[in-house]
Length: 599
Ligand SMILES: [Zn+2]
Image (cartoon, rainbow, N blue to C red; front, side):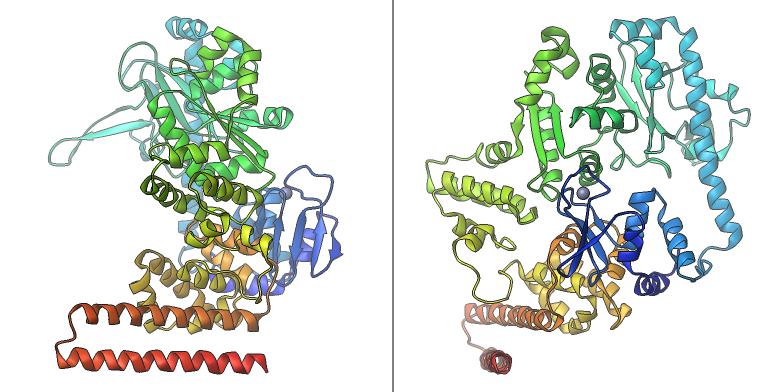
């Protein structure tokens, strides 16, 4: 781990315009620099680099990040290597990690090397075993696969014996075998180790590769009857199923050629589709589609078609995919949902109706907007006020995830229409950020941005301007917890990270800092990357206003509670009066500020 303080210093010294400018021709345009996006194909520039935010953002594909992020994306460097590279070019020396001793670090590297080696040796072994396994070859032939496709995907066969891998790994008791998920250790009741055996036995083996083509896990399919039908590697230091897509490495070029990617339910679909002339298919691995999956896909292409089986499990999978997409869609992404007849999967469909018919189905797949409306309204009776209200209720969390865009406006309009409301009503009821419909009707009167959930508004300001985090006192955080317990936890986390960064804290350094904590803030970072800059003074006032509103809300809640108790106790009455005075004070404070700022 590189200390965060070093990252902050590094980002303060480096200029992102220089970093990106080495690889992309940039032209000054207003406050920003513009160029052709290196992450997607385009003819007119939609890639911007902001010197104030020290961030890049592409309006075309949504790619964004700091100087470090750019080097990682562009050159495929790891985080540590990107930091080292930047430091080297700017005369800085990366301090040795204080938490990891050199010996530990060497051990760490050796360990992941050992795991990679286990996976690649096992893969070679399974492939070689396939050649001698007649029943496995017969099975693949029966599924219509040629030797060429089997070789392209590196398919193999795990023999039926309990310890076949012993022949590849003479030290069968090695820890790395268990850590790579290739063997299972059974213990007796006292927890003592009893025996070890191969995880995959008598199965067709599908190696799962990462972006670099290295084998990081396996999927194994049973040949005939038996359970489970599909068995995957467990999560290991190399393999996290929520991050990886089966077939993406193999499909890259085909996705570019076809102009879209087809997301299917399993590896058998991917391989069968490749055989049938649709090599642009990938699959999630025994898990619902995640937001990370969607981001990975949208880096490759602007056009994603989810193809799910027509059964109820397929419908549920489609719904999860919709949820995972909303935060990432914008106006030049096309996302569609293909539902095959209940009795078909892509493989059987193509075999029965032919490749052309399948291509037509893909072409006519249901657009996200239509699927969205169907999902939120299907269960509700739009003929009643209650049904329409429930439809709005169901749509709210989904629309709130979306960034302001033309597509969101379309969804708002459709929703308004079927629930007998106006788009502006929907936007204000849902507290959507930067309402699109209202903005189109009348330009906003003040420079303040439109209302959003209070704690989210505060978080957005703090992510963009982390130096303002000092305004979030413990008492303020307590207020937030009373208004919105869920959001408040995230807010608290943000303040905890931003406050120690001090006055010099800026957006890019914070974004790098948040990278280490997980992806909860990805949505906010993307929004800010896209926004035009605002003056710190204006933002400070906006934050003051939002915090004041929080205090007011908490006081109001307390007053209501007191009133409900009937105000019989003298202490209650006294507190009630006190709150009224506090409210007055807050009002005066607000008036004072307003008159100061209008001078
Ligand atoms: Zn782009």
